[in-house]
Image (cartoon, rainbow, N blue to C red; front, side):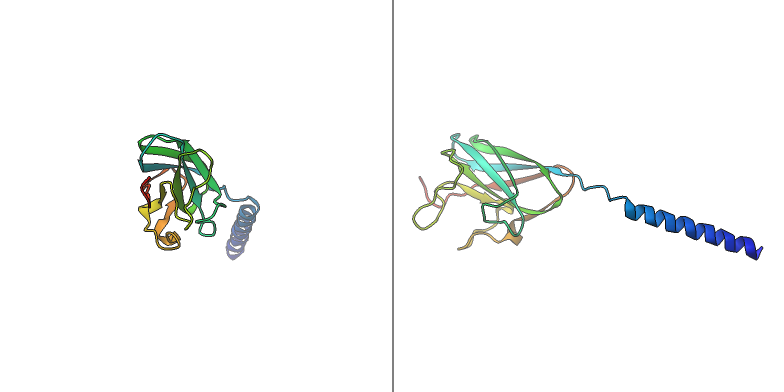
Length: 155
């Protein structure tokens, strides 16, 4: 009997070893990318496009954000959809590109002339909002957020 028990443990151990080895050889299923829908409110006119960028902590407040989208501006709210966003932590930055030139126009002090906004309606400090105030989590399902455009000067 003892001999059979040892053989059983040996076979069981070999099966376990083979299963672990196979699991290590097969790469894990990649995380599914998600659609992020950003409802941008306080759009004051229908000229141009509303542009949204999803940024990592390292790219926030730069022009190097890895995911972008745009939609024709609609008075009130404009929804911008950004596809194929991998799961992770991001912050959204948006602006109303009234002239369709793809840039935020600024005054001589560097203050935006067009409406700008950030996820979580993060408060704007002297150097802009903090990533942690604007950060939100993207999983593998549709993520919907809303942010409000703000103007620092009237037209």
